[in-house]
Length: 285
Image (cartoon, rainbow, N blue to C red; front, side, top):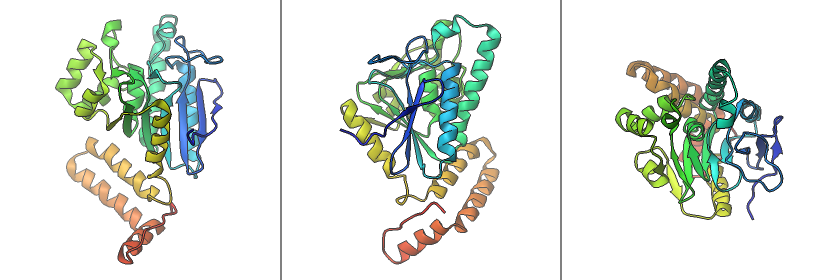
C-alpha cells in the first residue's frame, strides 16, 4: 500500500492528476494504442495524441500555479509502459499539416516542463520509446524500474525522426556521436545502458508498488520544508538556460539568480541554521 494520491482525470480523460499532502503533483499518462481513454481494467501503452498533449498541458499548468506543489512526477498507467510515444493510428489518419501542428504543440508543452521552476521527475515504470522517451527527456531527473522495459527513439523505422525534441535533447544528453547512432539504427537500449551514458539517473530494482512508493519518498526530499524551493527553481533555470549561452553570459545569469536568492527568507534561514548547527526549515519564500 503506497501513499499514492487519489487521481482525477483531465478534460480528455487521457491524463490523471493528483497531489500528495506534502506537495508532489502526479501526472499519469493513461491511454490505449489508438490514444483513446482506457476502460475498466485495461492497461495500455499510454500512447499520446493531440488530445493527450492538451491534457498534459492542462496538468502542467495546474501544477505550476499551485503554490503547494514543489515537485512534479510523470508516470505511465499500469506497469508495462511509461509511454510508447505518439499513436501511430492517429498519425496514419491525419494530414501532414495536422502532424506539423501536433509536433509544434507537443514541443511547446514539453518546453513548459523545462521552463517550470519546479523539479520534474520522470518515473519510468515501463517501456519509454519514441515520444515516450521524449517526454522523459524533457523532465529534470529520470528514474527507471529495473527490467521493466527499454528506451530509445526508433522513429527511423517509420521513415521519420524524433520530432518532439528527441534529436535535440538526446544529442545534448548523451553526445552527438552516440545519439546519432542510436537514432539512425532505431536500436532500443536497456535502462542500465541508458544509465551508463547518463540518459537515466537511477535504475531501481523493485516491484511496481514499491517503485511508486520509492518515487514518492525520493521526490519528498525536494519538498518543503526540506529544500528551499526557490533555490531549486533558480538552479534549474541556470542549468536549463545557461548552456545555450556563452560562458561569461552564463556566469552573469548565475550571479543574478544568486542575488535574487540572497534576498529570500529561505536563504536567511539556511545560513542561520548552518551557523546555529540546526536543521533548516524552509518555507518557499
